[in-house]
Image: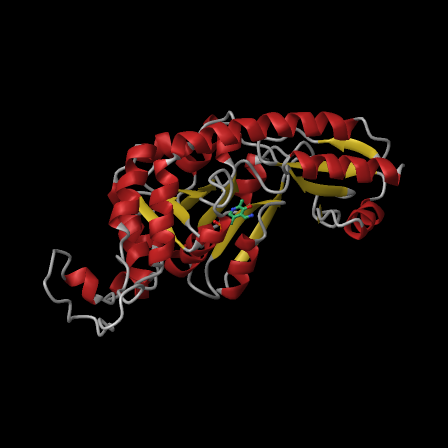
Length: 344
Ligand code: PMP
């Protein structure tokens, strides 16, 4: 399908809002175009609506042209935009692996779009035939999260490429946890697949969840449409400033991610030795999915001890499982101590 066939007709027709700071971007002696209050300095000016400086730096680090980068209020905004741009409420549908990140389903419901979950194999690999059997003429988006939340595994790039080339709609690969994986990113294949959207976030390896900044990388014509639909000043000035600082330190981010991966593997080994632990699943992310003898009871005991993990025991294929984020050394030690005290 061409992009024009995939985008909702009302969005294609849209005359986007042009804000004052879109119209004039040079130096000025007096900014009298945006009804701001220039009597008090500080946060009185609207931010750059297209976050030019953040994208310029991100573009250098990621090797992707700035015109192919969209910035959202977390990946969550990028996820919601996919529905608003591509899916006609009450008509279109999306297909997603199951289990996966919960917001794909929540945003589908909010946007009145049918959500078609396709169960993973018991080893959490993708059943490609089942995935494509769920597709019909109204399937606009396919959600693949890699490394996947909550299962923790990454999918081989060859498989992601196969899916992106076979699916005629928009393939989204959510790479929120990619920095913890040896798999590598689909970004390097962006040029090959005009309907591929790769999402990343500042919330995980970049340690900036409070900043609320997520990224979508795609062909320029998709990014242009996202920019037409987003709120004019979606990324506030504090976030833009902070992002520039964080990006300046990107080598440090990679080192911290490497350390975290080592800590994850140590934690996985410690957990595997505990009596109540049935299985620690391999992880390509910054968390571990752990099957235990009685998830509800261990979850409650940890909570009472002030150690909060995620009870995933009612999620497809994750029966009896807790999802545990790799913490700092003290947090990991406390977790192990409390599970040891719990016993079997
Ligand atoms: N994608 C996945 C797979 C996630 O697990 C999460 C958050 N846990 C997000 C996206 C959301 O990221 P953000 O904080 O950028 O909205």
